[in-house]
Length: 332
Image (cartoon, rainbow, N blue to C red; front, top):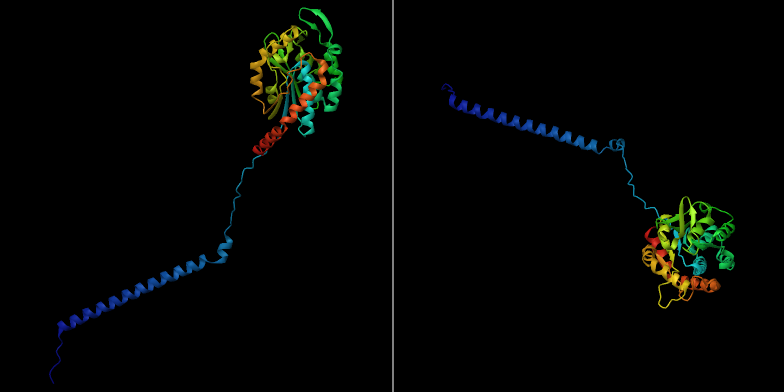
């Protein structure tokens, strides 16, 4: 038997190949094991994240969303009554038409004749009562004549008449907010009276220069408000009205006027044109009764003036209601 010879070169190669196989197998096993451990951890994490217990333990905070609510602006109707002496009885007819249609002014302002009617309406008299009171008014029972270079009528009777009708209620305590507008004779500025004696405020507002004596108060002399605010719309706005109905009974200048009173009336009308326009453009509604055939000093035409005022207001009533409705929708 031949002795066994080991081929060391072959054995060396075999050893190297075997060792390589072992290393490769170990590496693969290690990767598989790490991968398995990684997958197991991921599954456990997923399982935990889907746990109802974990979800229930987290607080849910819901923040309310605040939506601003626009507050409706209340409608405050102002009634601005212009001057016009005896033509002012037309205001009674306008008030009747408005009241019949459920339109009640919370604020009233008046100039001259408008302050007289306005003060009585602000006190709380109904249209029927205003009409009855108007029949008591004429140039004789209101005029207390005097001989003075400042005027031929004192105005005390007018003041006493108003105070008697409102039972000496001061301006600030009338049922409706009321302002009587006069003119400072020395400065030419308009002044609104809304506190104090109602009668003297109306007297000042009605004191036509050179006819009535100026009213002296607190170191000032006051005359007819028509010289500075023929239809006091701005004073209604100042008092808080956001919807103003103006009543214009001023006569427009016309040709052919003759006589002292007619020329005097014409002069006042000419002087007030610009001031009148400035006031009326601030109104939402302007009611202009056709008083062209009436005189500022025609106290015998009371009922005709009342009827003309009523007719003019009724003619405007659809527009008045339409504008009030539109205002309310825009401010609701």
